[in-house]
Each structure stands twice: as structure tokens, then as C-alpha cells.
View 1: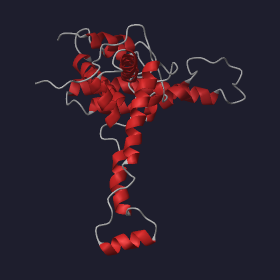
View 2: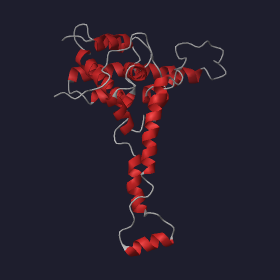
View 3: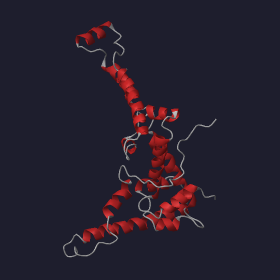
View 4: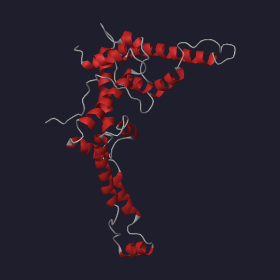
Length: 259
């Protein structure tokens, strides 16, 4: 089976700390944000997607200014805020209640339109599409999961590197298991993950042991940072985690429709 650039990205990421899929997804999002700010800030399709989503989710919105507010970030925020402001203006002077009695009742109460009208108008403030950066993260995630399953076992597969790594975080471990019915691949993955997590449990236990006054003078070893590693193993990296590199992974910036 041909090996893509993503295979070698995953191969290298397995030698680094943390979940390799989380790491590569973070890199893909960094690449998307960088391309957006410096190359695609005036791209009509990108601007439309961002506008329809009312910007980005909390995590990815702050990634725009992680290195400071660039001109690209200011232009994007100006466009999104204009769009949001137009949506709020549509809440003013909305449709009046249809019946005369309802209209009189609203006027007596000082209402310009009914709660039902407000509910319809407030829909203008709801995103009509998902966060664009989350979409890029999903593309990268799917690619990584597929590559891992395709190349886990077999000659020169990734299994040996996986066994020596910190393994997948629990969300990506579940995702990988849900994507295949290949019994050898499942067995190999589960056995490797059990060894990895057993090692982590032992490190946590060692942290607890060395909190005992009788052993508190012992030097810290491989257990250092076990608590943070355990959290990352269960839920993924800390929000806002960045993993920039000089040569980012080659995931697509956007899935474009093909005719």
C-alpha cells in the first residue's frame, strides 16, 4: 500500500509526547489559520464560510490572535462583526402581530413585536454552519485515523512505534475502534493501549507513593508530569494547545466541491 506524506507525519508523531492524532490535528489547524490570515483573508468562499458560522468556536477564535492581532485577523473580525450587527438590526421593527386584538395588547404593553417574532428574529444570530477550523480539524482527524488503521500491522507497520509511544487519547482510541472490524488490528491496538495506560497508572501510583513522607526524598523519575498526561490521555490536550512547526503537515485547507 502506498505511503502518503500523512503516514510519515504519523510515524514521526508517534515518537513525540501525547496523542499523535491530537498533535497532527493541532498542526493542521495551525496551518489552516496561518493560510487564512496570510493567504486567504480576501478569499470570497472562506469569508462566506466564516460569516455563516458567525466566526469561530471559542478555542479556534483565540488561535487567530495567538501571536498578536495581525491585519488579517482584524479584517476577518471586522467582516464578521458587520455581519453580526446586520443580523441584530433585523430584530428591530420586526413583523407586527397579525390580529387587531394581539396588536392592541402588544401596544398596551409597550411591545413592538411579540415573543414569537423575537424568537424568529433571534434565529438570525444562530450560526448557519459550523466553525470552519473545526471542519479542518475533522478532515485531518479522519485522515490520521484512516492511515493508522491501514498501516498499523504488517511489514514495516506502525505497531512497534505505537507500542513505544504514549498512545491515543481516549476519544481517538474510541474513534479508531469504531472504524474497523479487522480483528488482528483491533487486538494489536487494544493490547498496545493497555500496556501504555498500565504504564501511566504505575506512574500515577508512584507519584502518590512519593507524597508519603517516608519516600518524599526520593528523586522524581519517569512519573514526572503523570497527572497532566493522564488528563490528556482521557480528554486530549489542553485547550488552546499549539503545535507549530517549520514544515506543517500536508492536510487540505478546504474540501472544495467537485463537478
